[in-house]
Length: 223
Image (cartoon, rainbow, N blue to C red):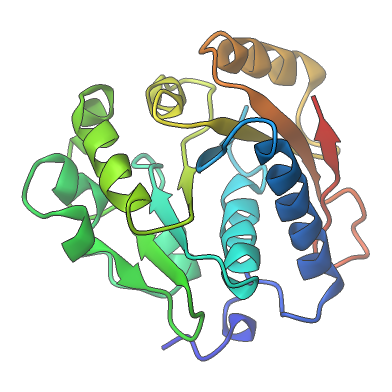
């Protein structure tokens, strides 16, 4: 059982320098929301292993610690990680809800020892990625929005998958994550072009692991 964020190597401690950076990212999203309500945010990246999922998980913790009710939906049905980060069961989750086996409210799990935060893991139903293009995802997000202040959705990388484009249709904004020293500029440009083509605003970009000496690092750059 996760007793604190320190029990997960992916979650920054409440007083850590890394968590201050995620709080800054939250503040930037909140500022952007003054001009246009942002209730549902998707994290995207061009390739795997950019730090997208870790960034989203820590952003959710930052919202929860601020007193806002936050929900995370693991929409990365290709390589789900949220259940591992928060050390939750993945027996029932988004995939099961997409097939109509459960309601979202029944599948949501409270994050251990993190008040105000709930996780809808990917679930155990196979072949659910194709259902992301259906109207079921919209219904699920609307149901979750009715109970939470902010909904954060993880998605697969844009390279090789159309899933992020389907997920973006139910979002108000996108945060794009790039790993410093890893992602090639051409891949970033191609991914951003695909995402901007959806009409959903890319709120900004997170440059992950910019300073290897820090526990984690991110720099928010408004687009």
